[in-house]
Length: 101
Image (cartoon, rainbow, N blue to C red; front, top):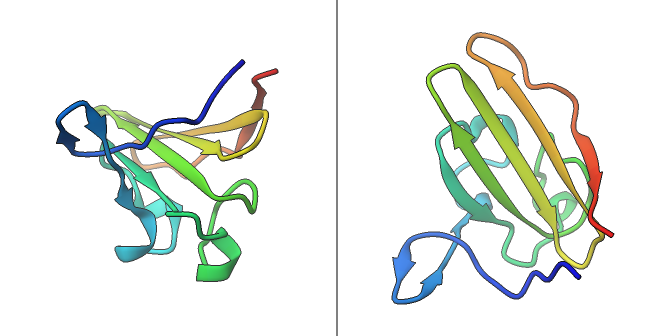
């Protein structure tokens, strides 16, 4: 089964740790640079976050190329993850749920 027993971001030894999503902006539309982020155990609705797919604490992976930005929202204690993307100069697509189990 899928396990969330890891943490994302800058490399410190063998552990990846995440940038906290709520220290820069509360709108996921603003996260277009490649990076690893998390909500640090806070529900998105509790911090006024915008454009999130489900109100569950999460890790967020952002992959960016010259033309496409992809966001992957991995909800903690959930059996699915959420994906969306946008092309340069366009809006993000709607979040799509992917079942893990």
